[in-house]
Amino acid sequence: MKPRNVDILNQTMQYVQRYGGTLAHQLTAIPESELPRYRNVKHAFRIQTEILEGPATLVVGLPFEFPTELPLFFDAQRQFEGIPHLEHDGHICFTRNENLVIDERYPGEVVLECLKKVTDILAAGQSQSNNYDFLKEFEVYWANSMTSYLQAHTVIDESDKTLRELDILIMSVNGLTYFVCERKFDPYLYIQTVLKEDSKSAIKRRCLYVPLCDGTFIKPPTSKQAWTFQIVKDALNNNISKEQKRKLEILLRKTPGCNNRYEYIIFSLPIEGEKRALFGVVIQYEDGMVKSKRSKIRLHPLIQTPKKIDILPFFITRHNKSFLLSRTGGNTSFANNNAVVIGVGAIGSVVTLGMAKAGYKSITVIDHDWISIENVYRHVLGTDSLYNCENNDCTPFKKVDALKLEIQRKYPLTEVIAISKKISEVFEHEQVDWTKVDIVVVCIGSPNIEMAINRYFHQKKNSPPVIHAWVEPLGIGGHVLVTKNQEKQGCYQCLFRPLSDEDSITNLSAFSKSGQSFTQSLGGCGSYFTPYSFLDSEETASLVLRSLYRLSRNQIQDNQILSWKGDPTLFLSEGYKLSERYYMSEEQLSMNGMLYFDVNCPVCSIREIEN
Image (cartoon, rainbow, N blue to C red; front, side, top):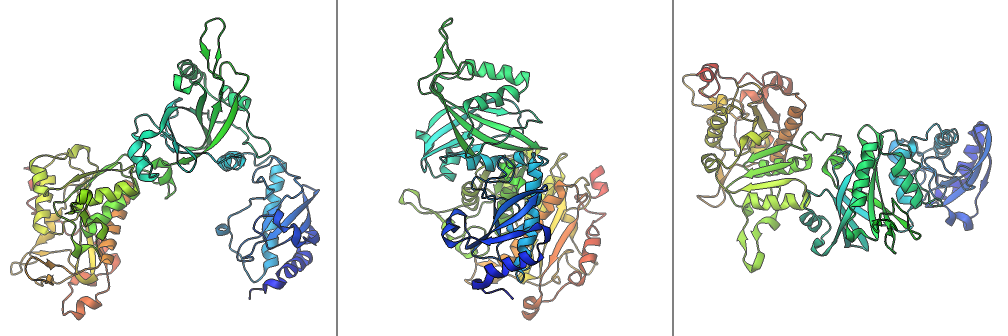
């Protein structure tokens, strides 16, 4: 049972005093008048403890939601300055709330458990055994040391470890804001999309990108010890290779005239593996560069320091795709991949948006149809995408055009190529260079058209893998067929054949018994549809996306049929019948995923391939 708030301070102190042993001595409640000195606390008390056999005084703060929230600890007497995990106000960062499971019934025990972690961190800091943590937390220290908040949004290729020039755009967005990018990157549409700013009026300058050598150790600044120009200069001189120094000297000698009073530098500090900390400085020399008496050439401040020079730090917000994808589990395998989605209806639209989230370099979407009001409740796009109303002329949106706008708005680093044509026209006019495509996903849901698509790709010698996806009616399931995946045998055509001489052609993967019709109409001819919900299309799209991840890891090495089963209650209540395949277990479905192969298939059989 959670203690009543009025008693929680006394109960906590009594518990810590009684069970703290050698960890806690001389607890003293802090008067209410002193509480504003400590961030976000409702109660607080001082506690005597020992760090490396030496006495130490800490402040324990109980937040407003304690014990649901963890207690806060402060080095109020500044005994441990200059060690990792100690913030400018003395707050000791020892864990995040989600990293520690606590029992709210015993708030005193919560404090003691956290106190053990705090004393371990302080001991490691005093002995300098955790100095490496300075690097891991460098960007946090950098941000906390800034007296004024100055931000740079960046699109930088951090895998390129060469010292080079970048473009920096200086804009008035919530004060002064920078946008820094590689020179090959066109920033204007991106800035318009993300920052809602017309960057055409932005001031463009040079920004130097300086990757420091592996093994570099630099202590971050603090609120009391800000970086000086000399520290910046030493960081450059002491932590770059001879080759990088030569490159830097060349760039400094050809400093653009527009950088005559300001130089912008972004440092890349190695942490571990491919992880790097980014931080930036503006070097201000308002009186301009020093002129060489001998050559009459103006010398860059990093070559000849002027009398008046200042340093202004700025914080980096990364927008580059590889960094953002690393936060989703570290999978950046699609960053250089090009995909094609044929059919962007209920399934294909979700697949396309998912591919953009996965970080595909480019996605070509092919569909000749318009967005329809009848489909918005199972399509990824809503009613705001029905019409293009520019210049007071509202015209229906093509699916591919509306989807392209949606992805550009949400994920502008993914290129979307919209082709509003039937796939047969695309094939006929060779509008796609299939040699540059890594994966094709077909979500048309029309067997005859998909058979033609299947034949087209099986006639190509170097076809990319092709995935077919479709959904069954009334929530009973959906299917994903992987083809052209290393092995040639096993294709979409194989699925369609009679089970006996007396039977008609049927889809072998179907969960519904053959011979039934599921199309319905709400408005007569021209309004026929197959009933299924957005849950069914999204479940099938999810299976496609998971298959893409498995393909990228070589976890699918053949041409499988993958299926998911839903609840058949509604389906059966409508009088429809299920196939025998529906009654297979998940294990049986998985084991039989390649039994659909047709040895006499006119498209992929061994005889056909040899011919």
